Length: 312
Image (tube, rainbow, N blue to C red; front, side):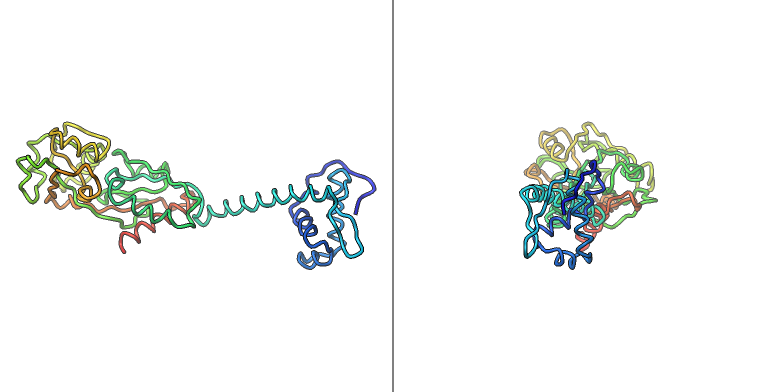
């Protein structure tokens, strides 16, 4: 199989089929057997091996024996490297194919801070614990009051959770979870004995709220004037619900938080959660994405998973 002359290096001689034939020939040590596996004549395999040897400076990769072939010392050395190359290529192929099935890649998700603090972590944990999603990376961002619909439309994010009073034209929206917005007060507050309150009951009090609620409330008031959300005296806007609850405990004002925060957050101890009577205060969320080829399959899979889990 060793050529009489060697030619300059030609990368075409290192094609994948020739490399796979070489590995198989090292393992089976029989041209006829390898030819049967690959559907090739032994003479065609010999020519490919000769080109590999030629590419390697004429170094013999096999020596002929009475009952077959045996790798030379150079052949065994080359075998280790070829196996590494083929294994790396197979791993890369598997990973890239995972992008088309939704088993690999990155998901950029935009979500209200309130859902991050309540129901979303459990749902995400159930999605990510599936071994099929072991190669997924999930990048979560709080919406901070920004226009989630616009950011999904502009493809700054792949998936988002949105209060369903917003205009979601151009997006696929699936039903997700609901919550009830509550006024939160200390046990010593004048409203603490009530079972519930209306938003109008809070107009004379200082309000403490997270940024996203205050901005969303203003945006919804513009978009849905019939919801009758009156202006509130927001004295302190904070980045998280935990910050809001601590501020309420310190007497800085009446806070807003979803009802689920009472059980999910330790900061709720010693505070009274008063459900808002107003119809809009029962918030229904949808999980949305832009349906095009640029939206990762994994993001679409996550959206449908969250919807199914919430409706189960």
